[in-house]
Image (tube, rainbow, N blue to C red; front, side, top):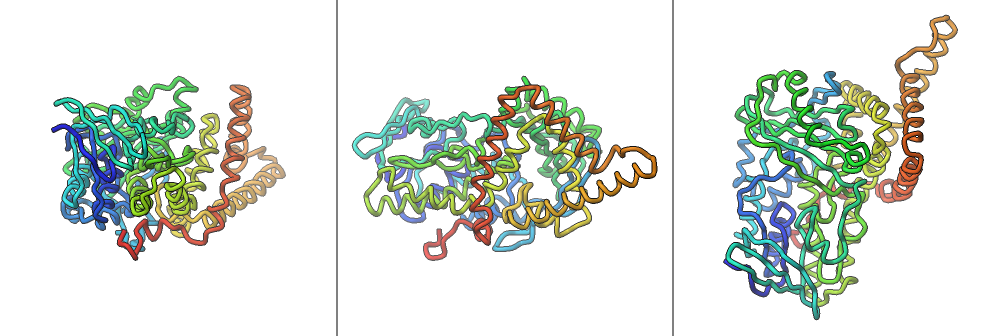
Length: 498
């Protein structure tokens, strides 16, 4: 059917963020329409991993049974490869089952997850138009007009509020001057489903290689001898160094067969698909007169892991409060939606800006050997130091990022590394054994080599990178002034239930 009619709110995009927004609005009795260009179920490029904070939201939305979460393998272990070397194989130390979160994650293929979430929104009261794309979006006389297109022709939806939940190429964002094309904050990836996999179904696998730095690869078991495997990189790096993500992906899959014993006989059961995400560090503004952006359209993606399912749903729960307030007051100017900016910043900045700072430092491909060495040492320390794994491990996907505690651990470790390395170097020199080639001296040599290579390759880019680091550091106030990460408690308000 054609998508036409008048509503209170139009949500463009029916992924997890769009479905969460529609559910949250419908729960408040708001007349909301969702337009989704695909016909569900459909494939979506993603790692399919839903962390504990995301499972908490799914349960609150009433979708746990529909997704059969109780019968899915509980992912609570991880294996981290650096090349052929396993640096960490242990429990996910920061999955503690706190604040209503389960002590594990689940692999939920997006064709199942997105379908269940959007069906739930429809059952709650949202009107969902499948197979409907937004051709154009405009605002006139206080109303937003969305021209729609289906196989049956065109139509028009009208509402005072529109929500852009339509991904990286957001039609809504483009219509309101919020196009996101800064490659410093865009990740690109390739993903495939494998069969013939023999691996622990409760253990996720990630790996790091110099070939796809800055980035990483993953293998997430989906059950029944199948797995989601892929790799992602920074878009800026691919462009600067003329790297083909498709070729890098193919080479990674070939290496995977002999690096992970459980993948030795794995074969591709689907065609590789590519995708992109916008990461949190690239946010400038996510509200405008008549609406706001959520999910990937609003760049609510972890800058270190590129995970965005949970963050997308969180942004929608937060944004629904602003929309409800605007509808209650009957005011829809840009200033009226500014509360959303304040609310999501208060919620996300504590951890996300800190992670963005580190992601900015690691952007320089010339420093790949150095940062790979440092993070590998971190994983190796985490293997035997549970407290270090619990606190600093959250930089690789935990909800309760604690910047002050992480900084204390990391810099204490660096100081110890330097002290031990320096003492060892002096002992070797005094004993006539020469300068050692490992430990602190090796790391220092890697740093010097990387710095020299970066300057020689492109001095202008190198200086702009340093300026980006300074800018990222200047935004770290919220990371250290808030005593508790607001994400730990979740996005729901007890007084409203949302």
